[in-house]
Length: 261
Ligand SMILES: [Zn+2]
Image 1 (cartoon, rainbow, N blue to C red):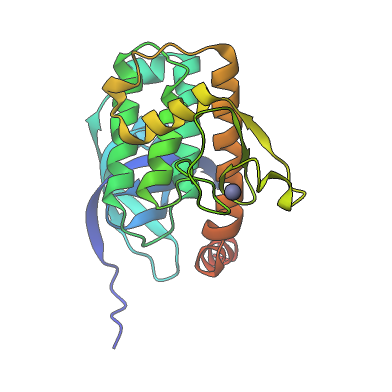
Image 2: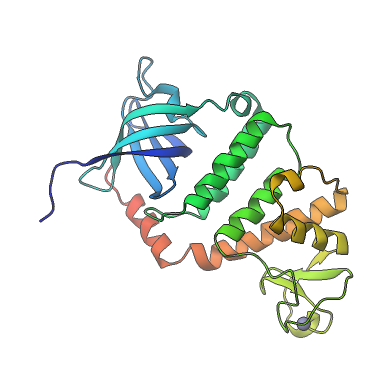
């Protein structure tokens, strides 16, 4: 028998999405280590004297008590700040990078989907962003790590089609096929191919293996940065289209959209 009493639990979380809701409430999407995304309403959060206040704003790292609602809509009952991330919240550019990191993390997450590695990756990068100057590879390295954690890395070691070793030279990347393509396989399909110079390929391979400490010291040309950004963006686009927007994911979205206001 299902109990009708609301159950309350406490979790560490990052606010990855927030919007105004009703007269004075905020609707928040929280990323948690073991429960994936949790969507909840923070009642009265927009009132001046709310005890929830700024702690349910975007990119807050918090410990939060959630009261499970009878419908799918849960509510935030208590919030405590775990780290201020002051440097991140004080600059527009850092904040927009942080929001981008949160957005891709959210897109690779589902409600109830435990993924502590992904959660820790987001917290780590927000903390880096908080204290370090912006670096053009921050978002790229983060994308690579999110792909690695979720098992969606592109094939960059060998040809994605025939599996043959790739000569150390410039190649092309196929977002549809999910990896680098050797000269023989290049024309086997008429898909869109992206340039990947030898240096771009080396940079991608390095970012898979390296910690942030081993990436932040790299100096890349504009061309390499542009190519790496394009390859990763198009790859993520195809991965998300194919896999994350799977039936389970869409079910969640549908349930959320049809939740009573
Ligand atoms: Zn091939």
